[in-house]
Length: 217
View 1 (cartoon, rainbow, N blue to C red):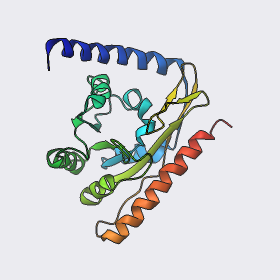
View 2 (cartoon, rainbow, N blue to C red):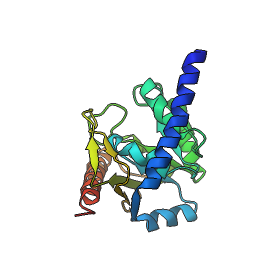
View 3 (cartoon, helix red, strand yellow):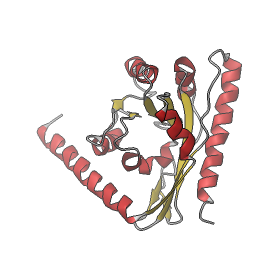
């Protein structure tokens, strides 16, 4: 990477951090369903957080300083969240389903086997939108980690015209961050049963989106 490109990305990271901090401090937050998630982490249980690509807007600020390992695409699009999250207490891991992932897969497994926490985008990096892919399920089955769905919403929302219908929140908004119930998988599930779990988790995340959307009705 050239010197000028490094300076540009450094600037993106600094401005992004300041912008997210100012936005978050202007908002009124409601956090739901956190108790079971916090209990798992207090007990040192491994967790795979599941968040749709279109709902990652609040992730850099909301999960900062928790020593979480997010899996971020190595593409230039992934450079923006990577730079913003850098220095905010994340174990940033670059990789995606469209690149060689054996190394990052093993790193995620090691993190979870040590009682850590990772963030998986089950419809990322390029969709289809809100179609749950199998990676997070197989990771949880291999490590015994709990799957924890997560969503957010706001009455003053703006959805971008992108493949993931990316959700953004305006400053001075009410914002709800909502955790679903932790899900433990049977490590002996066969492929047919895994597909059933994939469909179930897809519905769980979609239902959680709907619950978040109706929080302020």
